[in-house]
Length: 595
Image (cartoon, rainbow, N blue to C red; front, side, top):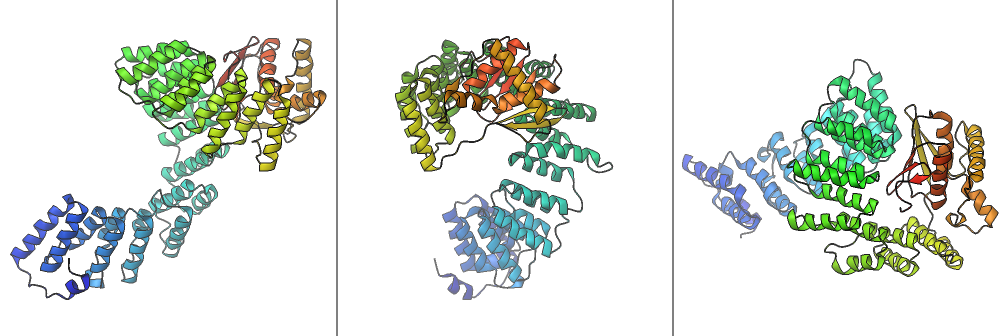
């Protein structure tokens, strides 16, 4: 191929109708060519001068951007953009920008266009705000939008907000939202999604009230309802979720399948399986997502046999299960200890439905085997038989089983696997500490604690939330921030007295700090779950369940405490921890003391 500089100086033939038709035909065929053939065509068009003759030449530049790697596409574009007279229109520039895959290359092309006098418009900047671009890129384009007066464009402003949110800059998204002169439903939904993505779930719920309070302005739509129900699912905010559902029904969104599926998931994740099942039963056209949400909800709440029944009914209804459905039914088997059924469904997934097991499916099987005490067999499955690479969750599942069964040697090996993945967390070392504590090896407990201190490994503070009257109350251990703290501590002391009379004894193995027995008991007394239970007892009517959500696993002592509490106070307590639900009633737990 001749150098571009020589081609640029080649004499150009005079335009004729025939040559223009030939050029048009060649350009029409360009979209189907691979990159190398495309470059050969480009060289031919340059050598013959046909590209300059065709009115479709700007479209060819768009094809180059779409068909070639970014660096080659930019070389082709640079060759043609030599003067304002050769510039594509703003519309064609936007097409080229949309086709360039690398945001940095797109930005370089825009700068070249502007240097030659083509400024672009608000849509031009919006194209550059691809979801993959980072906050620094967004801030640069934000400054351009302000300087050029484009920020009034709703599409551009919401694209900027989404970019900030995807980059983890929730404050930047909120600041931009507040600057917008006009906010449509899309802008509100992007802000709500931003809060949810950045784990500012309480702020997400407040935005619903803020939206509704603005009379005469945009009101929540079906997408808003779905986002809010998902936030309530994360937070365990049942009452608030029901308010969102009532609003959806009032506005005519209640019949939409995606809204109903979100409601099923919300009820399930709040431990309210009966209501989830009612919504599911009343949904006329159930999709695979509906069935999977219901099966997973039953599984997470410990209703393994009901989840299996729902799965079998799904098969009879001629709805084909997908990967998510099998994740649900396998987790139902693992949570309920149904070993034979779990292996049967695992084989069904692979052989009958030809679905390739992913790491979550193997995680359920490992959990199932761990519950059955088959720890060495589970380890062999992961290390020798799995056809996908094990992730940190699988090793942690096995590590949790080691805590239950006191399998110290395997626990130490699992920590080494997590270190290899560079995925170890403070909670992993806590599980290992609990494994040592379960067999009474306090020297090893001290060694691991010392190691954690030397490496600066700090545990995540336990946090328990309880909803009351649409407001979410958060508690940490020894919490003194709640406005009703005096009443809460008095009530917890009263509960402790009644439980000790009934035979409750603190499990000091749950307290892993270097304290004497009395000190360990004292440290256990004011864990976040216990403070949350005391508060819930103060504010929740006797006939209503107490619902808690915790960011970590429930410790052994709090689990024992809640079991005894449920029997003495005759209250149903539903706790959602990091791994599963615990339904405490009559002095027993739905997990059968395995979690």
